[in-house]
Image (cartoon, rainbow over all chains, first blue to last red; front, side, top):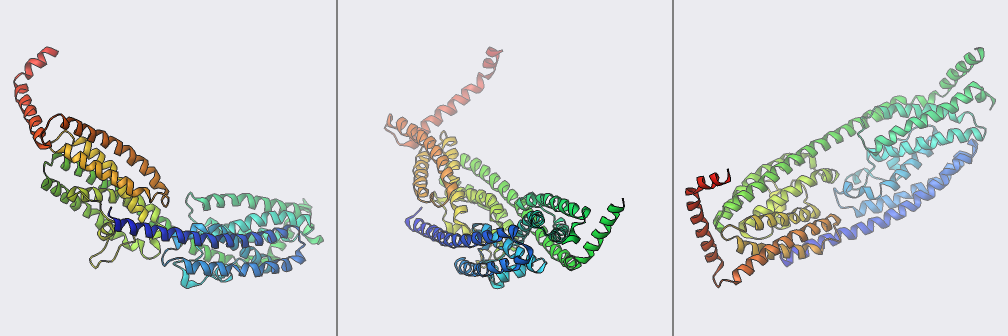
Length: 219
Length: 279
């Protein structure tokens, strides 16, 4: 190889590793934010239903501040290279999607859309070749939410809330029907989808216990 | 029984009272319908690219074998240049396949499927670099490889990644080792072995600085080191044997050739006798 070619290649590789470092910095920040949010969200299991909206309120600011990270990433990633780098931040992103989805469900009782999630995280449509929420990441976030809701069904009962499990049951069933429509390959999404049935079973057992004892009316 | 019936009734009532949540089921259906289409398209495209990559690997491997056969028969540099040309012609097939794949790899899609494309691409670069080497004894550059993956107007089918380039040409050293050793006995083989030895040593030295960036390259460097050791053994033999006779390499080849052809002509006569002796 002549000297010039060597230099060129070296320069390009240097540039790439530099970029990787800078992305990593942002991902670290992203990770810190999502960990804080998850920490707060874990309190739903010990919070009475009436206090949940105000608990959810406290994560809105940190959740929306993820927009700073997504904007920084969008300015770092070269055009068309979304898929090249996305694995670096997908864990943090999935946590953020999970937090956004759970917040909306616990306050409004509805399923967050991919578009709605993008808006909360400040991700703009015109970044789609650099920073976006892929279908996989969104679906992963939803599965994490179901995992969490199956625990919540149990813990709500501990706190004396017998309505919550019934609401969760109806919601998760609808979601499960949706997931069943997908033709999944043997990948992580498939494995996580397979785990959903255990969450369903757990929720159904709680519903069963409550209904047979007629507890839902004694609230 | 009555208790159970009552339970069922309240359950039904409850389910109805949670109608607001369930009313979103049609929107869930639409949403997931959309995801199903998106995921199906992704999986199908992925499969297509894996298949194409396998076909490309196949053609490239065949081209490498073809180049070995032609290079072994070649006894001067013009024959090698001709071999190179035949190999390059065969690789046009691969270039046409990449041209037909370019629509699958438009924009951000290339990086989505890079891992599926890499194996075939690296094999292609290996074959291409071998043909290139046989032509003028040089290493194909990154720009030259990218130029073979461009349309008539110079637009790239997809961006060539540096790691695919380096990993592809790194495999060239293995082919050159085979070429040096199997061609060692043929005319000009000794001189060629010495030339290849220097070339591969240069490659190994050049690639070394890239190993911190591309971890697979480290493994390939180990293979290159083994190939280099084999070529060095061959080159050693070439030098030692030549040193005993104060003649140029080509003349030594001629002497050996004469002996070989004489042997063959005498052997034809006593072939029967030998056969009889063993039976």
